[in-house]
Image (cartoon, rainbow, N blue to C red; front, side, top):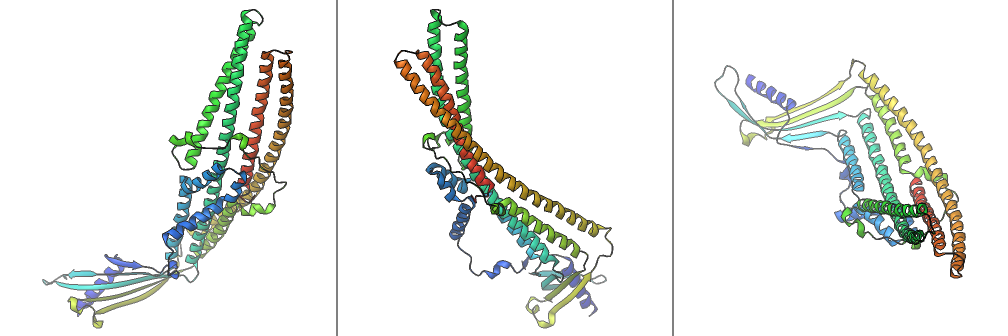
Length: 463
């Protein structure tokens, strides 16, 4: 009898102080409320739909450019930064579920055969045991519940961060695309300038040979021709860099960058400028909403830090069937049971809890100021984007008028040339001036489209 009590005590001690392997551990999950899980195809369809909502694909159709629309869709599906952002949302979701598990009882079941030899004896005995253990921290003060709420706020914030990533990438695709169109047109105009400067140089060389043009003017014409060629190289380099960047943004290899199609500058659409932007769009920006979630989380963390001063209440239970014979292991008389509880309060922690509470309050103040700052910066970005768009549109229209006047003046010069009143050299020099003004108009027009994309980004796609 004495030995039996000793064996029982040893078993209880071993069960309480060890991990039982193999074991079946389980906890109730919040997902059990959903008896039917949607199929993978449905999930993918839903994910794709909210991705399109993130970037407001209907807004991009306003440019009336099928190539641009296609690149936006490819970026949504293939961009690796966006895939990382989506995976990060799932990461925070699982972290929230891990924290939620702390609110639930933890139950373990297993099989534990035991051999025993007591001091002062020569005999050995064995036992077949099937223990079931349960532990639970009674969340009387809702401390664990608040920790789960805090973790959920991080999950919600990650969704807004994901949306911000989609907006940023789609904006980058649009801006890069229009910069490529600009580069195409500038290269086309630069080649015409090079051709004219080559003709100017050749004409001056002929005139210099007969003494009608000084050598200094000839050298100057040659320098202008060489400089134009160098400018063309810079433009072609810039276009190739932009093409490579666009390829990566849409998830393709840069080896295929040269094959990327785009609209001609002459067919590109000039955006319409909104007169004003309602202030309500600020409330829909993902960075503003994310900052709001962080303020809520910080407030919950302060509440949790206060609850750390309260006692922890723990329950523990043990039920075990055990016998020296496997056939008798599940008899009620061979069942061992234990149920206990504790309420523990830390009396001295060296100021740890006080410091933790002050720390959480400090973090809350920092996050609150960051929230206010995010609001101010959001208003600034919207205002700056709208001002840039309006000013660049004004600049475009002004330079367009100058270009049209210069174009009319050049037609008079052509008439004078045909009438023999000016030389072909004079006509080429005036044509170069016209081409230079055209380059400026091209840049101004593309600037307006890029500014419009910047306003789209600043308003969180709610333009």
